[in-house]
Image (cartoon, rainbow, N blue to C red; front, side):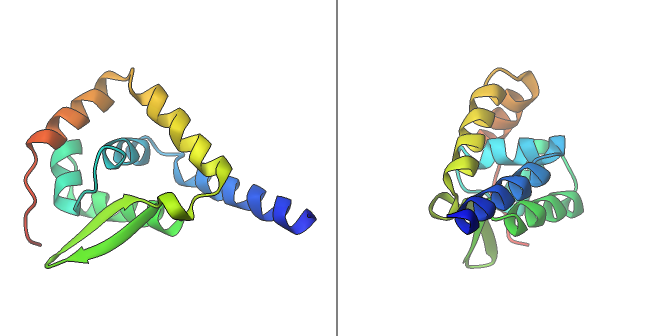
Length: 119
């Protein structure tokens, strides 16, 4: 039982570290709407390819995102099946809080207009 509780705590700490930057919160916000390519993240958040890729990598490494290939694109989505209960609750709380944030709503609006492009 202790090992399981310890593992859950480590998972939560890893998730909290991964979302400790505003840009990563904004990325999660749009990926909770739909899976995205690096290009779509760049367009939605109006950031560089380097910044988008680096932060997507951090979220992926923390176990919050899945990545899959579709032709020349890598598409990122929320790692629903890999999340423990605490991480899932954390993402649910973030979604609720970000719904009231003006910048987060603008990101989602730009996501609806973004175009997937080959890299």
